[in-house]
Image 1 (cartoon, one colour):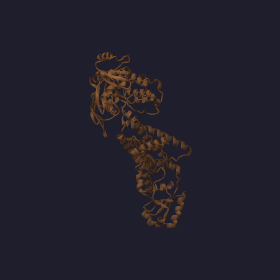
Image 2 (cartoon, helix red, strand yellow; image 1 turned 135 degrees about the vertical axis):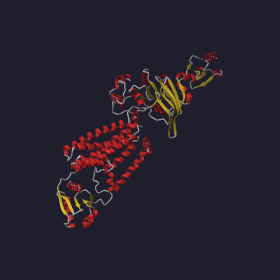
Image 3 (cartoon, chains in turn yellow, purple; image 1 turned 180 degrees about the vertical axis):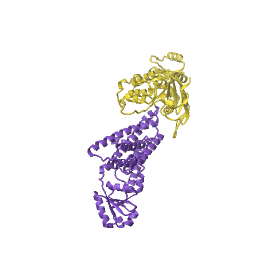
Image 4 (cartoon, helix red, strand yellow; image 1 turned 135 degrees about the horizontal axis):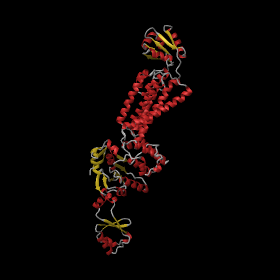
Length: 294
Length: 335
């Protein structure tokens, strides 16, 4: 399938800094593509080159096989990480302002329903809560019924409830066969929404694939967590891969059945055993050596 | 106190590290002081103004005693009719023509003209032919009104447009608009028209309201006045757009705007006539759109000038508007 958007050897230099050091990717239609990375990894620079906001120092970006141009502006929807709106306008007036900037648009009543804006239509945009504001910004990104939508850290700063509501909204948008490019700091968000992810570090993509595929590629084992009080001293003499945390003794194993049998034979109390599978957070630390929020 | 000092230090560092704003804040007052000192240098003690047709040198040969008299400012004119009009409207106390048979003109109702006539008789006898003109004095308020309205328009156009666009750029609103099909020229033109409508309505209301109480002199056509002021406002908005075309620093933009507005305010003839200042100052004043707008509106209101008579000013303002708007659109950056 032809990609909706593709990039080849994207490079972006700023004075004294290489923000993006050569990125190639192709995003097929109808998926949610997640771009993850620690602060300063170059993901906002990358996404802004894909959006056509910044020109790359070198490399190309193609939308449906063509260079970005007037058609792209009509067919793309963008929610920036930081955006101000025209002051002293209500939510409805803001929607009407942006509606007039495009040839083809979604009817505003449909958009109001989709983004749950009915209760705040006549409110000054400066007086919206974080969640309300993000819903409005998403509505503005959708107003031209875009085929491709960029969401740059859309839930940063939202409370868990508002974040979950926003995920539901994005899932609804995804169900309309839209292509979404998402950057986020939240691994559970990427896991919940993204069909494919790319992890960036130091201006490059260091890992790319579906979340399940990446986890199975990087982690062929599981972690058994046993509270310290339950782990006898003999446990350390069984030849297992054991590490201690503040509260637990953690055993990494790719042979779960065999390890459990060994622990039972050793008389280890397994009543409070917890088997932890690997998460995207673990994957992220594994490939970048950093915590996401560092 | 600790908190106060911390905030004070942070703000000082912010200001000092914004190099562009710092340079303008230092350079602007310096340039202003030097410029004003030079512009208004000289004895500056003249009491009477005499217009001279035929050259100051000729006057010094024809009337050396008068020419040597102190506290008289001589203003050369090439066009006799224009000079006579000045006497008629009390803008000049006396006019002397030494290009042929020596003559002088005074306004019969001018006290300064009466005194100057005595001085001429006392120094040169009765060798000059006396010519009297009649004409009411243009009240200071009638002379001053186009200047004050023009200045108000200038500040509203330049700061109202310049600062707003810089704020839009700084807070990311322009970046959001860049992501839409909106073109730079469409955006700038919308800003221009919005401010133009606003300023024309405000100016009309201010003029009409004051006119009820003061009763301004209006010799010409209101339509021509509307045309000239509309073009003048357009030109100054275009300058505001050009200044705001790239910068994201409000302090830097403020510095530039002050640097543009102060010379315009002082040298455009809004507060006082530039007659008698250095010739280069009068030449310099011609580069300001406000100079042309005020000169044209004064001519329309006080002298009944027609459109064809103010066309030179109209052309200059129009050309400047097109130039600044085109340049502003060309160099404009959303971010």
